[in-house]
Image (cartoon, rainbow over all chains, first blue to last red; front, side):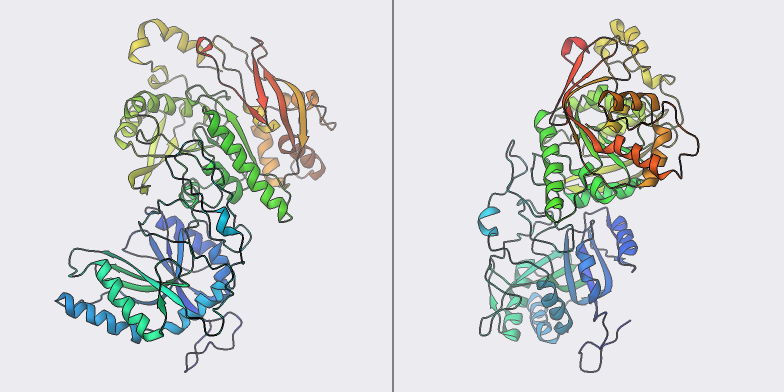
Amino acid sequence: MSELSADGEPAADSAGITVTIGATVPTGFEHTAAEEVKEKICVDAKISKDRGRIYFPITTDKLVQVHRLRSVDNLFVVVEEYDHYQFKESKEETLAELQQLASKLPWNDALDVWKLNRTFKKKKSHRRGANKSKAKPDVDGQDAAEVENEQEGVPEALSEDASNCDGIDQAETSTPDQEDQPPEGKVTKFRVTCSRAGDKHSFSSNEAARDFGGAVQEHFQWKADMTKFDIEVLLNIHNEEVVIGIALTEESLHRRNISHFGPTTLRSTLCYGMLRLCKPQPSDIILDPMCGTGAIPLEGAIEFRNAFYMAGDNNDMAVNRTANNVFHFQKQQADKGSSFGLPIDTVRWDLCSLPMRTSSVDIIITDMPFGKRMGSRKKNWDLYPSCLREMARVIRPGSGKAVLLTQDKKCFTKALSRMGGLWKKVHTVWVNVGGLHAGVFLLKRTAAVFGQTPEDVYVPQADRSSHKEEKDSSEVS
Amino acid sequence: MKLLTHNMLTSHVKGVIKGYPLLIKATEVKVNEVEFNPQFVSRMVPKLEWTALIQAAEELGHRQDLPDELIPDYDGNEEFLKKVHRTLLEVEVMEGCLKCPESGREFPISRGIPNMLLNEDEV
């Protein structure tokens, strides 16, 4: 596409310069993210050995579209990348080398992209007050302040909860009066964030950040500021892979749709990854029988609009939050001039006894109680088998698919092993959810008609003798 | 609650054999615009219980002269598909209740959300 001319200036090409973009995505969903990049940006993404990161080349005219990717938590532009960086033996030498590196790196293109990126952000001088209330994951009944949705093109920095997935503290950039670039004479403020993984390094991430940062400061004459920075320089070191980049997102995009948080709200990028896994088709009926705040069905209704979503929960607050989130999103769209309602409905129900016709649903996608933040391990032993049976009943035999997220892998796998006649495990994606190691299980419903396999007559131990006959007759609906 | 949802909901009160379709008693109905997608509608039609849909639309006064029985060749018939689209997705029951046709048990609908939870003794 476009070439750089000899002095590094962008060629007279309306597409702009070519740079490499790095994106952090939920670990485990690197491939679905790469699929989305291929589909929407039409380029091939490289999946880094450093889990949760993908890289892909773009011309700068594509930057706006890149911000619209639904799989991506954070974006940065690569300054330089080394696949096999040879670290020196001693800490002193290594750090000295990093310092020297600062002035030798090809910063120009990346800085141009950073400047361009800034022009996308609308000035939000009223934000300061509004988003100081952050909803923590374990606070019940608290509704977070309103969150901007970046649906049409440009990302706003979102009011975000503090539990950031990669443990990096992302502070607010609070310069409401600052234009695209610092006015004349005003010093650019920056900070360096270093993430380091590997057991052969002689230095810590703090030391690298400190020394590299010092050299960057020298080179550019910027001012270091940990909280009110204009530019965030990223130093990612994963074994021999070293990537230096400049952040393009201030805060994670991952809770974009949700304005009413609940205790275990799932980030939208994870929801999107799960939805992509089940490949919704036009007219698919998609069920989330324990929807919580509705993160999954809402993401689906927005991003895979040709299906219909039924979100349900037994909890009163959850159901209200879901409805509020849907309403809030629709209202935002209306404010922007698009008045269409979303293809989603909310119902209050008991998922072990769904008030739904047999074989009426095409896809079930849900976040199952983990037993840590919600429910309990003991409850899961009874809940999981009942769930799986009831889900098998309402889903279409043969074509039905389920995508289920759970941290209680042992209980789930055991419950599933008893349901071979109804469900087949197709694929598992291992993910990280709020620091917990969880699995996303993709299941296919067998063609067996419900009511005819031994699994259908499962009755909990205590009830076995008296209730068996009643259960048998009520299965058919 | 949209009528597409209603088309799939059924009464699960203990002992009930014919809990479908649920009768609708609506005190507040809204019509909201939803983007029309002909492919969505024409693929959805075979998944529906048509009679139940017509009955529900009739109960809400939004039948729009849809036929008792499905017409053949509805696929390319945009006018027909638009009416079905409206019935399925645009007409919403905001307040009222759903009633089990056999037991008479009523499930309230509030702010568009049906509450299908049963009491302990009904399960």
